[in-house]
Length: 488
Image (tube, rainbow, N blue to C red; front, side, top):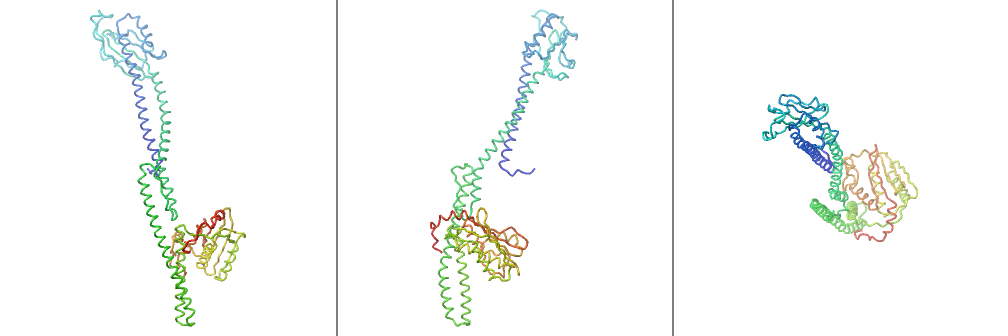
């Protein structure tokens, strides 16, 4: 049997099963006790009447005694009653017309009356009262309760139909049949609600875990309203978040400090190299060495700049100098650059006019340049580049696609990771650091937008940059509130 994976459903079902078992057992026992109590009360009344009917009397009194039995027994007038009296010789002294022919009489009595003449002798010579026997028999007309006694003078049996008792017990049974499912539904509903309430702490913990990102490590799960059983779990989780936050801040601070400390020496070194390069003899070996060193310093400076931006983005301190940007004009200018950088590629553009957004112009240009640069570097010979820019209800989307080989799914999953460059066989001949896409996505997110890799299509790769214009417009009021980071 497959295990139910929902803890809440298991709790509700288990509670319903346990409650149902208890209720069914309680119902069966109660039904039997009620039935037994009714039969015992009838037996007690029958015992009194057996002794009374078994006393010596004239033969014509049996009918009158039978007529009074319903009143004496306290049963409804429509309940069938039958009386049978047999003398010592086995002759029937009186037999009710209602006596069911299906009732067995052979085992009703365990002894026979004495041979004393009827009526009996004087009262002083009477033996002690006999012990009556009771049994239930089933006939075609229904169930009968029979009380039988042997007196010194005769064998007497009184049979009372149990149809009235059976009907009463059917009513009790129907009440249980209706009440038990209703109670079970209430129990299951209550168990469902209690399980849901008990799991509320887990749900709050899940919500916090789902929101834990590099910018959400300061979140904590409140323990004031949590159940006692979950307090320890929440405390452990909060402690884990605290350690993660402290470690992440230390790593981010180290990265930012290191990049900041390297920025100035590299700038000085680059300036000195450029000055020395100008003084070197043209075409000399020293000039070539200095030129090579200058390229490496510039490359290091670019790495440091990107690392610094990423560390600021991780710390949520990336400052944006927001201005109104005409993306349509900006993309049109970049199309001219593509034709210069990659004249062998076919360039297609579908740029809607008037795509204005509010954002940091330099950073958004860096994002677009990174996407276009990747589209050129990872293109196929005689390939193509397509840039599509449209406005939608929430903002602006820019798609940069190019002809390319298929990207493996493992590379697609890690394409935005820092310093990840994918399959070495594919990227060996392509210059890059593995930081561009990661930084571009952080810049997009700092503008309340996003950068995504579209689902794979045969023979092409497509990135989509989404900028939500409404958010950017509202953020316009933030201009001047944030100060630029001292690192920049």
